[in-house]
Amino acid sequence: MINFIFVNYLILTACYFFGAIIYNHVSDGKRFLLSSLLLCFMVSMAYLVICRQNHWQVDYISLILLLFTCLAYIVIVVNCANSVTLKMLSFFVHSSASDGIRYEYFVEKLDPQDSINQRIKAMERYQFIANDNDKICLVSRGRKLALILSFVRNVLGIRATG
Amino acid sequence: MTIIPNDIGLYLYPIISITVFCLYVRVRNLINKQIALRLIHLNFLCFYIFHVLFFVAKLFNTDPNEVAHLLEYSILFLVFLLCYYLFIYLQIIGVLKKSISADFLIKLKDSGTAADRNFFMEHAGDGTGYQFIIKDRLEQMTFLGLAVLKNDNFEITKRGTVVNNIVTLFLKFIGIKRV
Image (tube, rainbow over all chains, first blue to last red; front, top):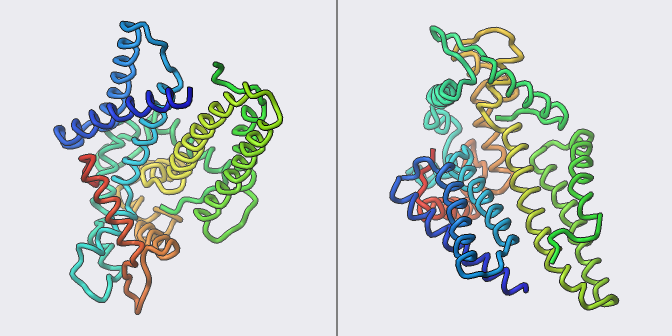
C-alpha cells in the first residue's frame, strides 16, 4: 500500500514539475501563480480520467499530497524570487570589490524610490489604494485588508522590520 | 483505508500548537524574533516527532493491522510540515513582519489621511525609514552567517555563497527571474 501511494505520488509530481518547468521557460515565468495552480488541477483531472477509463482505484492521498507539493512549490519560488535578502546576497557575487561592500552600496543598488513605486503601482492595480495627484489613500478593499493585517500583527505581537 | 487516524491528538495538535504558538510569541522577549520563531517551530516539531515515534513504538504491542495507520501518520506528518511551516510560518509571519506592501497599507490606515510617496520612505520598517529595511536585512544576513562585517564593509561567507548559488541555480532551472 505504501509503495503504491508513493509511486502514484511520484508519477503525479514528476508530471506536474515537468509541465511547470517547461511552461515557465516558454512563458518567461509570466502568470506563474495561475499557471502553477492550473497545471496542478490539470494533472489531477488527467489522473482521474485515466483511473476512470481503466477502472483503477483512485488514490486520493496522492492527489492531496500533490496539491500540497504544488502549494509548497509556489511558496518557495515566490519567496526565493521576491526576497530582498537573497537579492542583496547576489550583489556580493556581482560586485567587483574585493574588500567587501559598504552599506551605501546596497542603498544605491536597491533604489528605495523605485521599489516603493513598483509596490504602489501593484497595489493600485489590485485596487487596494487610489492615487489622486500623488496623494495616496486607502480604498475600501485596502482598508479591510489593512485592518485584518493589523489585527493579526497585534495578536501575534509582531513588529514590522521591513 | 481511512485517511484520518483514530487518534484525536492529531486533530487537536495543530489547533493547540497554533494557539500556544501565538501566546508564546507574545510573551517571549528575544532580541531576534525571526530566530525565536524558528526555535518555537523546532520545539513543536520535536514534540510532534516524539508523538509519532510514540505511536510507532505502540504498534509493536498491538494488532499488526494497525501498521496501516503508520502510513496515515506519515502522510499527516508531511501535511503538517507543509501546512504549518510553509503556509503558516513563512507566509503569514513573513507577510506580517517583512512585507513592504503590507506595512505600507497598515501605516496608511494608521495615519488616517492620504499620503504622498515620501510618507512611506520616512515611516517604513520600525518608523525610521526605508533604509532601516536594508539595515535589518544586513543584520539578518550577519546573524544567519551569510555575511560578515569587517571594517564597516560586508563580506559574503562560504555559507552565503552556497545559499546564493543554490537559489540562483534553482530559479534558473525552473525558469523564474528574480524581481
